[in-house]
Image 1 (cartoon, rainbow, N blue to C red):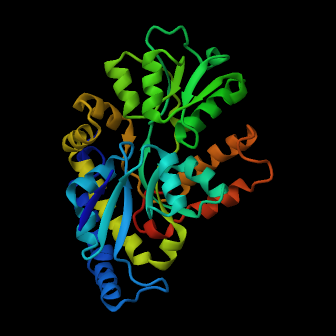
Image 2 (cartoon, one colour):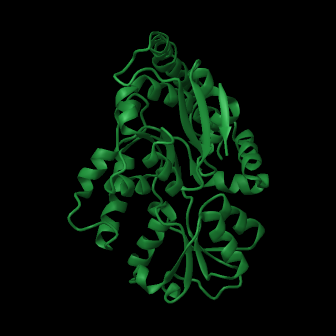
Length: 348
């Protein structure tokens, strides 16, 4: 059941036999056995202390291309036959986290550092899967701007979305160049509105996010004047912690569907770009530019994600965004759950 609410080729990354083996493993480990458990639980009215699951709500987002494939192909509905799947768009990590905090969705797409901030602030989530390693944010100005360095932002209006990777990127970039958030005039806007404010001239710079950033770059001559790929944190899929504890078989089925969509995306980069372009109302050239800086090859949660998110957390603590008495390392450990992807590999 389905209800809607509101690139590189695989051969350059994995041999064809490896992809096929991966897919057979997914079906073997997650598919029939998990489906049988889930369906028996539904039929018998059991499966957890909270009772059977008859519907779930999952987000989709332009910054999570794998979610677009999953929604387009209907593979999650196949994995969860008998469970109604509702889809809700997240316009940014902050929106996905608002939905998760309100428990209006069970699964939400965010940046890793944004998920950490939410966990520190009391949102009970676990990050269970890495849907991408992106370079999805940079600092952006119009092509005719005289801003060409981070230091030039002092006293300038900068559009940014709090609670997202672009915000965290901006704070870290300022700190790395001897500035603080107080040295700029932060104009708080959702990502698309921030892009429009930059192009319209009401702000001087924007902490950008793909695909809007790629569109501004290619079609509106915007300048990505400060890029730092290592300051982008991972794209992670988060789950409500209570839901994961009570319904691990549903979580595993969701990740099986995600893996099917991720592997298909690697093997079909042209079709992936077309799906992204249609969903976001973009040209295929813009979609391709976003996907050029989006790596889909490391889905397992592990050391590489931990190091990236911890680095962001320590940097944010040093700038005062995270309180000095917070155990950042412990919070990262509380956030990341390696158990659901421990057999996938690639997580470090």
